[in-house]
Length: 292
Image (cartoon, rainbow, N blue to C red; front, top):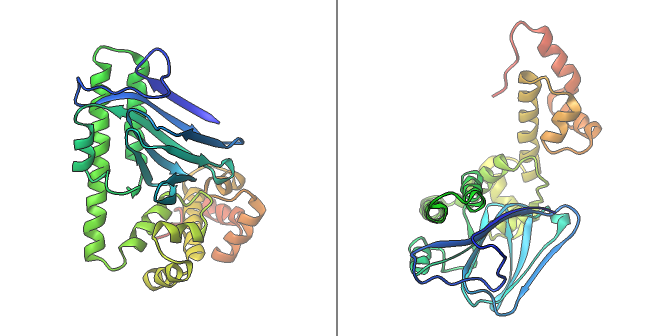
């Protein structure tokens, strides 16, 4: 497992810390990416602080009193103080997430204001900007510079506000667009096209049955989900073949194919020539070929 973290205290305090003297305070923040071993958390009495988990890859399984839920890339989970915590990440699912423990007399008010206390899992979409804020918080906790606690709290407030804005925009889009859930999935697919995407998981992110999801996806895009995903990958591969010196094997890996021979077959079926020939033709032309 790859793990990076920062802590406001000299030693890790498993039960958490409650601070009533500050409006917002970060107790700890970190990043985890599972490679081979699974991760399990069992906190029967929860913690004294709030915890927010943001998935940037893969998924995790969470157990609450009112049922079990899954969280996927582009989604966050919030635990309240004193709430039992039972969750699992599986290495085979490619779980990758940021986490943060925070407290303060205004913490609950901020979460309510930003719409982050009414549910279990919240879909916030693209996570690059959120990940940047998590990294900034970890950096502040580790550098121990003057006012680092205030800087970490400021980044946290920005993070919560950004998540709240994403939720409000998604709700507004859902109210005005009958295909809003498919639109969000398309955004996610264009962001995470090089990961192992499973159609059933995409359907779950939309809260749709597999059959209903495929039907709505085809109605919006004119293609099946895997066909659309292949198109994204091939177009990105064509761009890299045209604009970079990378070898075909490297490009195959970058766009999501572990087997370069399989990638070459898929590419040739889509484009008409194998990627090596496509790159050769580009080098022979006075101007690089461009694709829409």
